[in-house]
Length: 382
View 1 (spheres, rainbow, N blue to C red):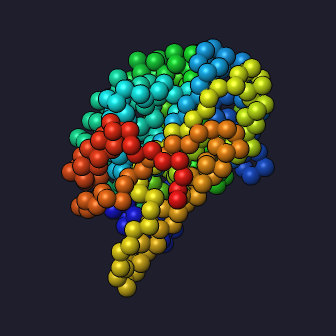
View 2: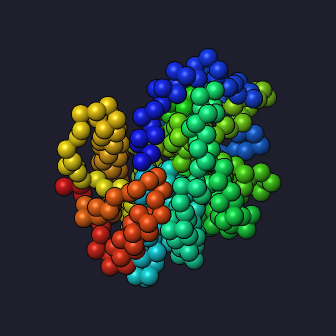
View 3: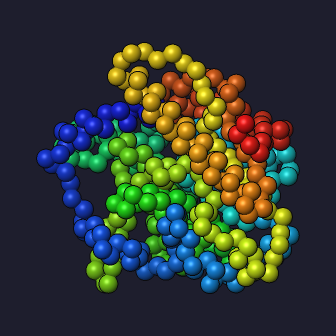
């Protein structure tokens, strides 16, 4: 399990303390890091814990989406590692059912960030998700590099195999298609964690795609990898930025470090945005939580590994539940209907290893059947 890998982080920190590798460029300083921008881009990201005023000023760009007057559907895809097989299967089952909407906005964190671009573009890309979550094994995701970690490396694994796999499907044609959907007033957003700032970052992938820049594909791939880079297990992604013409580097890791699922910041003024757009649509949140949310009883052995593993898994579970409660609160405030689906308690197949292919295939099938039957949605956590 990934959680067991996280347990050795303190040892790695101790062993590599005297030989830590440096960045190509220094980190932005505390006084000016808020002014950092990605080289060559504008309006492609904001802090996930604060609404940018740009969304109100640029609201007219959303008016090209004619459906906003009638309906707004927001799909949020959570973290969960190999449990992303549930969400991938659920989406295909939902497609087969025939009532999967075209989403105004899709957001993704961690494994959800790997799913989100394909979910955004619709059911014709379900086959990509099926391949990614049923034909993948650990060897297709990460190469173990324990010796590198002992001598100053940033992780115990190298996710180059995952990058290569993504490069085959995140093509320039796919980027162009995301750009076209952006011009129609639709939004794709992925979340990372800026580890220097200890803050969530939301990346507007549609705006990156619409930039027309030759490095847009690389940046999108970097963001997908950063969002799914479990600290210590996968290396962080360094993002080059500038401040007053000087170059720096930010460290970005798994978006789930700061939150496991998101829709928009708590301070966003939805009535103000609706007034700007002149719309009063029916509004729905569709939340796919790629894990179980109910407590799971299991006696714990009194050794440091099992206690640590169980404690971390419990911490992650309840952080995710808290994220869902926050979104439910937003929904009540802003007039959204909430629809939540998650891995059912009845799924109890053990995973033999990280990214166990047989485990993911079984979970994909469960997700598919629940999506096809349309009976897996609930609107509360009670």
